[in-house]
Amino acid sequence: MIGQLPEPRRAAFCTISDPETNHPLDQALALWFPGPHSETGEDMAELQLHGGRAVIAATLKALGRLPGLRPAEPGEFTRRAFQNGRLDLTKVEGLADLIGAETEAQRRQAFRQLTGGLGDRAETWRRRLIEVLARVEAGIDFSDEGDVPEDLVAPALKTAAGLRDEIEAALAGAGRGERLRDGLTVAIAGPPNAGKSSLYNRLARRDAAIVSPHPGTTRDVLELHLDLDGYPVTVLDTAGIRPAADPVEQEGVDRARARAAAADLVLWIVDASEQLPDSRALAGEGAELRWLVLNKIDLLRAHPEQSRSQAYSAVFAQVFLTSAKTGEGVQCLLEGMARHAEAAFGGSESALITRLRHRYALEQAHAALSRALFPGLAANEDLLAEELRAASVALGRLLGRVDVEDVLDVIFRDFCIGK
Image (tube, rainbow, N blue to C red; front, side, top):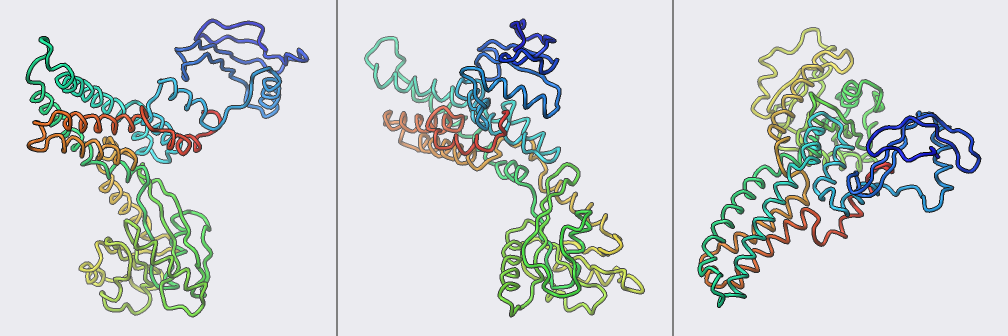
């Protein structure tokens, strides 16, 4: 298609032609990466085309007619890199998170994982464990050999204790990394006609939810993804919580209650222009952390006095005065949500563990090391070796060294075709 093989790892400007018709398709750059020094560890060629649809379609059609060529499956390039030892499984997951990152904080965390934040540390732990295990097993199998030291258990236990403490420290920050990857969930809840959907639209800066003066308009839960100072926040618009005779509306109320209960933060919205009930009656339902938002302040002749909003501080962590119609106070609410997200995600980017799978594997390794250090087990070298082996296998599973076929398809199916 280009008439020559470019010099390895140097871009060559060339004319790309259809090998069947010899018609030129494009003038572009071609690169040649001989294995094993390539992304996948195999021989790879790259064509950097102009981005027109017709150019790409014609080039793909010409490539498809060449013997032995076919389109890549989703994630196939990355999967080949993993299978050829260019990436471990944690780095593959870091790449997937980098592709899916929506905020700056998520991007930084994913890039750290891609460059070995957890994988390199876990590989170091695994190698240390293998060395210790080799010494213990040498003492078991070759105890009668003169060049095998007599006491191999004490150094093994010392190393195992150090590894257990390091893994324990990593596990201590597990929730932060997982939380940043998934984002903070904020549910907008409250009674009907309090302006929940209007506030949701104001945050979305578009008419994302239907707004109507008739109670019970919102039936399902709507989701809005926000980037607040680099931190991911998902805002949920829920149905007005009230007793409902309509089974469809009641289903919406039930869903609202369930999503509010699972949220990290609930914004309880009430109509400030109406008579406000007792603060305990306003507490509503949902997450442990609730903020009160006194909405529709544009309908008041004078804004509620500060002392009036302070009356609810015993029930609500914070109180905000807003007008979803005019936008007054909404920026203050957003700034408060951004500060809350920053506090919730503080130190998350440095966390080693970003997925449940990571935490589960490290918990297994930690448990095995704890059993190895159990008082009295040192006298039974066979059991000690077995626990050290179990810890090593758990770390190997984390990196994708053993027993990973069941998770590979789940990981790679979310990749785009070209990765």
